[in-house]
Length: 269
Length: 265
Image 1 (cartoon, rainbow over the protein chains, first blue to last red):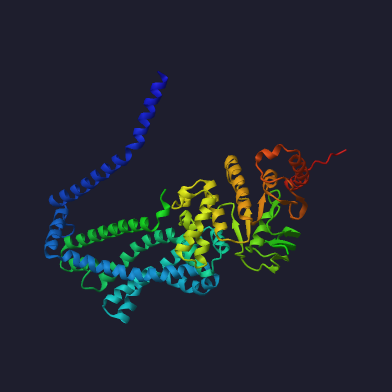
Image 2: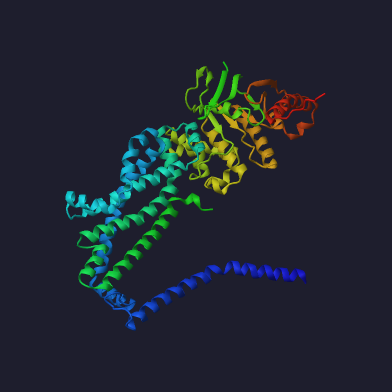
């Protein structure tokens, strides 16, 4: 008797442990539906002026108009390209620089003051200078993204090199590795998981850089879409632009997670 | 000429607070080619410091270490190290770990894959070539580490308590395999342990170290017959050697543990 009740209890417990994954997803879905339904009805009942906050249905309508005119892809691609180029260049500089700074005390001593100076500067603060130097060009946008993400990316990489087990570096030297081989074959792959984790965070920052650059001076891109919507009193366009930024960043994150899995096959089971 | 000669070596570690610790004091050793040389000592006696200096990871404060008569001034790639914590590259597969030394030397892919096969077979990892270290047990990881050192074909193999992280049964299997590998490869091996049984099972010659500061207390030529296995522990000669080692080790363990057996009258 006692035995059976125990197994029944255990079964119940496993059920409780198994189910929350599904239940929580359903709860999230319901909460989202309720949120949008409330929003829609509050606007429809006239509590809120649509110019202030249009209903979700108005945003969807705007989205379908833009989809028909093919405006969507233009703005998304413009912003995405700026992030890709600016952030790609920053990563190309930051990863080798971070590895050198992380492994050489001399290099660190030389560049530390400059880095400490650059790091606190928000990307927005580069906009006036970049406009002065490069005008309203694509390279001006790239440079904003580049400057906004360079210093933090370097610091992430330096930190990542610190997490490597020093015995691995010893082992490589013992097998005959030169200093450069240690950096390329041990420090880089050993730091890669933390570097990728850092770059994922940086990617979000790169997006804020490009949006702020486009808010100030651009003729396309998601930041421009928002600003332009406001100028033309199309609040639904503004909200649509914001939603698109969110969705694009989420998708980029998913892509990066996939890339991470491909680059780091040794981390799974 | 001795392959490795430790000549009057002293090592002092100085901390930031200005407090100096003497890890080793006036150590003299000579290891001849083909020897299985075991260093036995209680924990904290500086035996790891000694092997790290032979490998060139650390430099002596006083005295010199010679490899084939030349002083060791930096990391010495002629001494292959097997680390207690395996030190395998987690992002490399078993075969990539083993061939890494050859790759560093610029040996072509096809040639090094051919060369490492022998060592993969020697340590019995045929079916795990493409596994990552994370997927292996402790014993298997240490086999990879041994194969990696063997594949690099150095004249000396340094082993710093390689089996101390393994369970007792795996350890015994690994010891027997190491004896077989030693006889097959005729390498010079310098092996550190705190286990007297392990020292007696493996060594051709062994030294006992004192507690800190570490010094050589006793040298014993291990004349137990080869091939050896664990049943040898029943031999009279084994018992004799063991008790003579234990006598000198015991004193040091007591000293380093700070136990005072003196009777007050």
